[in-house]
Image 1: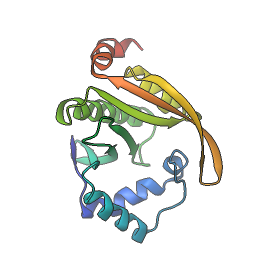
Image 2 (image 1 turned 135 degrees about the vertical axis):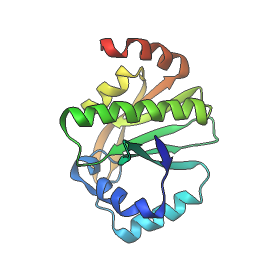
Image 3 (image 1 turned 90 degrees about the vertical axis):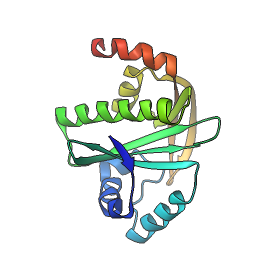
Image 4 (image 1 turned 45 degrees about the horizontal axis):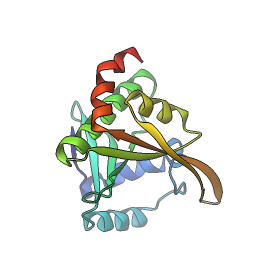
Length: 171
């Protein structure tokens, strides 16, 4: 289940965001202070084109899903998971989170296409997105936090997602 993020979630979400495994996959890989995080929350709370949600499964908060560009022609999504997840449990939670995020974009936000960007070194995420039917549409190099990284942009159409759901268990 995806639910709106609240001020009560901020410390847990900041903890996840500041985990090394999450930070190295972010455009801004520095640790975020409590003050910075609260200011960012206030900004997104008052920006209709940005949506942050908490992913909940079995009454446990497991991750964050974000959508930007809401209401525009291009919706971009991202996510991160709790740093306490590992192994098979992490993969299972991730699959459910990604399924719910995609369906939220297509059903609730009514998009026909969903976009995301992933660093080229992040092979687990690249692989999982492909299993869901995402297709590479562009690649670029960007400077982020004093490092140059290759970024891969993916797109998933509603039709491609419907087809990939049928074949997901085979991949």
